[in-house]
Amino acid sequence: MLHRRERRVLSLCGAVSAASILVFLVNFELGKLNEVHARSRQQYAQIVKLRGSIRSESMLLSEQNRREGEVEAARKGFYAQGEMNLYAFGTLIKNKLAARGLRVIRYQIMDLKDANSLEFSISGSIDSLVLFLKEVSESEKYWTVPSLTLTMRGESGQVDSVFRIGYEVLDF
Image (cartoon, rainbow, N blue to C red):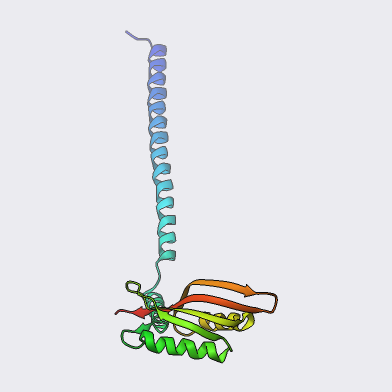
């Protein structure tokens, strides 16, 4: 039989063991709770970030309208199908060159697949040619100059040039 003292020690050991197990379980559960809490904070931060990145419907509609306006403005730079032909374009370019004092030596239609292009040989002042090219680049319609060659004639500022010029057509 156990003596009184041994029973107390045994009871005390049992109580300490029970308390240790209880402390271990509480710490284990607190660790899990902290982990869940940290994950919850992370997910909440992601929700806040997503809410900030989602635009309202009215913002999306205004963005769509703005982009449609940009597309429409870009379309205005193209000629519509049948709006321009190479002969009319050649006359237009010849008139612009003549208005700048540039002499057209010859011009021809370039037979390039799916290209609306003319080749001009001109003569005149380099300043006039630069002003003509500036006018081409600032045109309301999309004109292209895919090639340009210059031959300076001495120091007089006179130049001979051969260039190709074309226009863009919107097919739809």
